[in-house]
Amino acid sequence: MKKIILTLLAIFPVVVYAQVNCNPFASQALISSTPLQDIANSGQGTLTVNIGNSGTDPISLVTGSEMIVVISLSNGLPSTLATNPIASLGGSFFPAFNWSYSAGTNSFTGIQSTVIPGAFSGGVGTISVQYTVTTNSSMSNPQNGFNVHITPPPFLAGINTTGDDFISAFTWTTNAAPLPTTLTSFDASTQKCNVQLTWTATEMSNFKNFVVEKSLENNAAFTEIASMNPTTNIEEFSFLDTKVEKGTTYFYRLKMVDLDGAFSYSKTVYEKVACGDEIIYNVMPNPTSTTFKLNTITDLRQVIVYDAFGKKVTTKLYSDLVQNPNVSVAGLASGMYMINVIKRSGETQALKLMVN
Image (cartoon, rainbow, N blue to C red; front, side):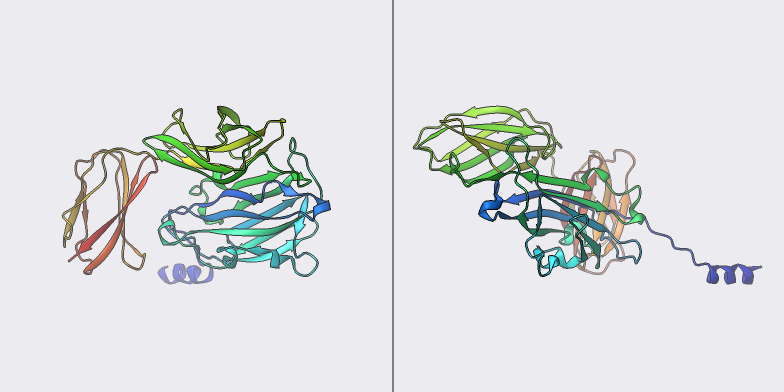
């Protein structure tokens, strides 16, 4: 009987995928410049999107079950369409996929061609498209831009977070009329559990005001939350948004209004409010040769230990609050290790451990 079972297994191999911590995602879709020049002015721009893996484990390359990225262009074509559409693509993650272009759907399809590293090993990069305007669109109905959709590998079913598998960005075209002001920088950061917006601008002699707008979803409806009327000698500005919640991502843009009513929008920036708890995890003792402890009894979910080459060597799960949880490193070779501490809220912290 044993011989028959072994023979059947040899004829019908069983593929088992181990539980992994992977999450393919797309984020921060941007168009440069915004707005684009119209057809009469040979409007061209660059569409850029972040692509990556926010999980700690790499996304394996499995033939027939690859990660797929589709980039669909709207009201524009690849700048190198006449010669080679693929030449319009670029970015640090461009080589991680095999690309094709469909003229019928005006879209690029990228099929994973290599292992996608985990978040702690450079698992985030960019893909860009050089874009040429073919149809104008108005400020009130911006239609020039792109959609990006990720199809995760089938073996990540139930693990992948689907809410970050799609993103888009759109702008309008202009006849090169002068903007109300020149925005030289615009950034968002977390400051004591609030979101701090900062920006600099020049050429404001005919300028009226900045309107700060906010949204919970990029390219969705924005709401005005503040208005600022600068004097002509001010170039640096800031606004503190205190109506935010920890762990939530907010999107912001500036509406720049001229004295005659003309206006334009800035790029969209975003910030996840990650103020966290005041308690910072510490490893005790460090170095060690047997076990280490974490100084926490908070909502700890998992502790993962990686060696210097990024290989997972120890994993420990927690279902309840634990006073100073112990993790064994007995038997590990001497050297430096990386510890990834994961809370139930999804927040993570990276620590270093020396094993002697």
